[in-house]
Length: 116
Image: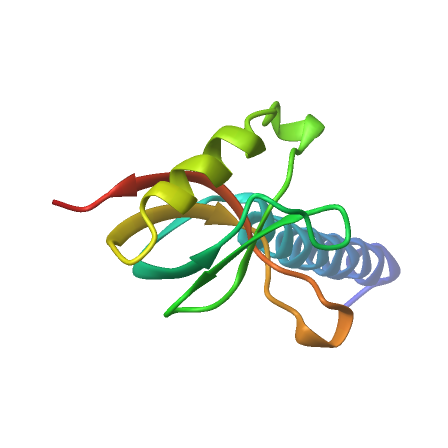
């Protein structure tokens, strides 16, 4: 193996590492920003804000309901009103984000609809 072959394989190895790192970053971002759907029952929802955010408690886990400018979501009051109206019923919640109890981070609700 001559010097040019070593240089070629060295560059190829570096490119593969960079592509792998980029793929991992994209998967992490995908898991946070891509919405998911959950079916559960709402146990509590109030029109008062907790720490500046609406909260929705369900049998599955708690959710936050706040406006997200980068997602063009400005209807948190309407969604919260729907959550109050559907309290005790089985609903389909569309949400995104991660639940991280260490940092008090909750998944954000995008929409709520009743399951009939």
